[in-house]
Image (cartoon, rainbow, N blue to C red; front, side, top):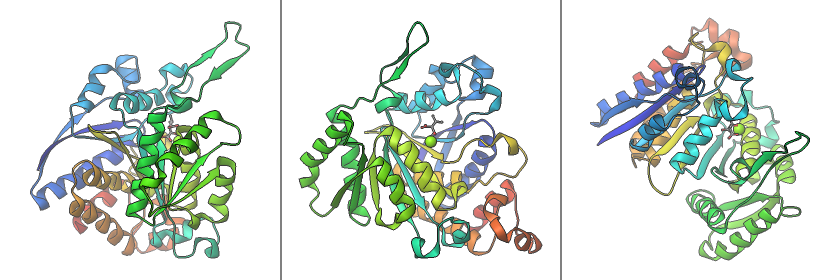
Length: 361
Ligand code: IPM
Ligand code: MG
């Protein structure tokens, strides 16, 4: 297979972790007889420095012309004081909206090797956590009408959803549930919000197409509580942009492995956007300290969802598991075992971790 992958290293540790994912992708190409070409895209803080804006059309076009996009991270304190339209985060919204990737898949998986890092009690976690959050990504309050009154004394942002926008994301939730444990929970605030009531109406209208899936609804406040009280009740969660943003941070934290979690953003057609869930961690940028595994696992998702290469994706995931089984850790996942890991010579940096995965492949 021959494909073009757009790389957005971005800011902070972004370039560090993307470099390791590229090593892994190259190894996959060599091993399975594929050919990738790469196009590097400037977006985020580095784009503000270079072009005066977080994302310019030419760079977005490079993404649209590719077969899939792999992003490291954007943002950092250097750009924190800019007006909101100019902040690096706007590059993310520009990419998401521009690429029309309406479905953001955020798996919250607990790696058994890292169980010690999970902040919940053993009896709550049981034999592990595996939740898939399907977050709507290009509508709702993030993209609705907003403004600030002329006198600066009031400001507003609008949550607005169309039937079509809701239907496509909820259908995606149902479809993923069918491939997993067949449970879908739609999270909303239907006791207050009209838009949430529409989510329920749409869901009720289409649920008959998925008779094998057990459907439930939770209000966002209750869902946040259930996430720490009994997270194993969840299989797939489908929710709006804002609720998905909040809930996915909570879910990632309870797995104890935020440095390990990947994500995929998909549209109806066109390239998907893949990125680690963690941020740009500017304090450790360029120091060979960042954990590249979330980006490497994002590359696995890219092969699976954009190129249909399940075997290759699995091969990367298995290689990551092997490296963890052998006891190798970057600082963020060494946890309370840090001294022992170090004494065993298995506390490794970004590059060594990437290299280990390449070798196990
Ligand atoms: C995320 C981030 C972004 C979001 C920010 C940086 C705009 O928190 O990807 O979850 O809110 O979507
Ligand atoms: Mg977020």
